[in-house]
Image 1: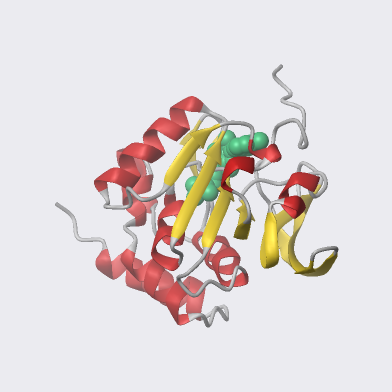
Image 2: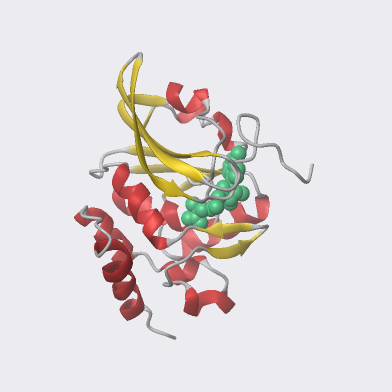
Length: 218
Ligand code: SAH
């Protein structure tokens, strides 16, 4: 069995710490989670590279730096209930499992949800709850959430995410067109008030669903 811990340490130093991520809990989580277990075996040796990678179904596992930035932006201390939209490989969900108390994750593509479930279980992250559903509606029964992270690009901020955010909660979401987006952080400062920040430019696969983009193949 190959030891990936050196590659993982280098990934965190060169791609995460060197680019300004400071949250030590995020840094520790990314040192822990075996990213190579969340890609297919043929891509294992590329798992710690500075890039997204294909995971099948025309979807990708996000670039490590993007996972770090989004995780840091959620400002988690370990007590939170978190919703992720776009389980994909399950890697971001695994990082969230280290950073937060409860993790709920929504995925619309059955094959990806199945594979993510397997990877998460085999790495000891069984506490992550995955549901197969259109994540643009959020997860009403489990709301409110202290943090919501959307790992696919949205045309606008779906109303349900704002409604399902606890007061004080943070929503991190890429908003823009199909090709490029701005990573936004929206904080619910009171029952009816939200603060908006633009964090950085990014490029995610489209959020497809009722309050997202239309599936072009449909
Ligand atoms: N967080 C993932 C990144 C996956 S890419 C990881 O760490 O690997 C984005 C994922 O969002 C894809 O798997 C895609 O199928 C999913 N997705 C897109 N629209 C969605 C929707 N409306 N609801 C749930 N998942 C969605």
